[in-house]
Length: 277
Length: 277
Image (cartoon, rainbow over all chains, first blue to last red; front, top):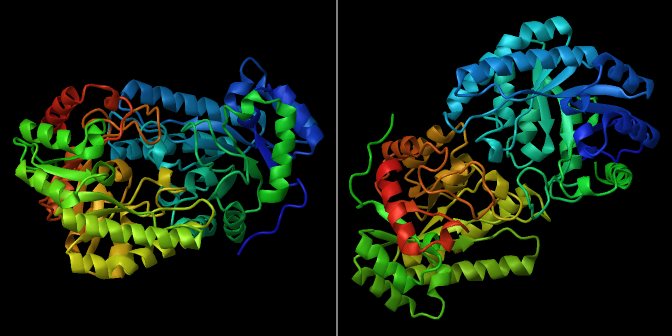
């Protein structure tokens, strides 16, 4: 089963990191005039700004603020750094609230100086610790499993099954999962775990991009939809069958695209979205 | 549980690719004089040589020829290329026989132009097709699951569970699995799947190296044991508990180490083996 092509842009959201050279005001203006309906805000774009005013500015452009990116990095051998991470996550929850979004994406962290199991325990404890604040602020926490090639420093949660296990174990309506095709496309259990995620009410977000062949950089060389081998239309069908009706969030880190004129890149994104997403 | 340090070199095998600048004659001479007991031969080192004579040369250096690397690359959208891959695998089986090793390692292949499921079917069919020849030649086929970051072009078999499933499904004493810590260290199911692999009599090979942070290249920047975050001693304990008593095969692809004097690098490998493997 594959989903149909997306005939309109009503489900299109861009992550501000995708057009990194633009500040948040430029992103708002250009996204809105291109017909983009949603925006996921990366925290670096809020620096030096009044967050509540920025949220209003985005809504004045008729943009839905889909989520704030990102909290997390709970796993750390150093106890003081773990404490600092908790403080930072509490600030991120406040920022999401001030901005006016109901979702915070969590890149959970990993530390090559300790075992993955230890990191996983710290992630569990870290999320559990901020659930009360998140709950009070009406901000949902989306655990994003990351590709296994990031298991050394970025996340010890590397499959959707692990994210589902953790979300179910935390057992709070505040905690769910963000499914990103770049991280998960290779997983033979993906269809089943997406269905499970939806069934549990945990499918909070859906991130899209593509996996290019070859990749020149392990972090900053993601492809535009259609440029790579990810069966995006098929995965979107699974996500929709699982009950997801939220935005398709374009999240592309690319040293190549960031060097281009961003208006031209935005055109390419929209064309790729219509044809390949 | 962790295994003890390796007090002698009786279990040490090197892949010729690890000291790529050396030809097979140099590798044999220097490995043997350093006390290395096993060698896994990469096929490129056999070019232009009489294979049976080369096998004798290696045995004359008191080296056990642990395996031949590598067959595989069964998955391909193009039918003619798939046929060529089968022919090449039959040649590889013959080469293993002539060389005098009883194992051929399979990097199974993937093609970004088709789905992973299609690639997996072609891998199954490809292995099944060469089992009779392998069986007749007394050459065991070791399916090596590769890291998910290679799922686009190198292998659609990306977890030990998948390799175990395939080996069990092929149901032949000729077909088993090669466990490589670089590819599998991140997997939350690793301990369980290693135990299963051993229980089924499918644990044919054990490859070691390390995962560095950061890595400058997705293919050619593996670390020496101890340079990274792989819990090598713990994984070796799992492998040994599963009944494995074969060689610990050092397989390091490294643009950095290949630029060094290889005799100095060999000393480093042996020190790292004693302390960290």
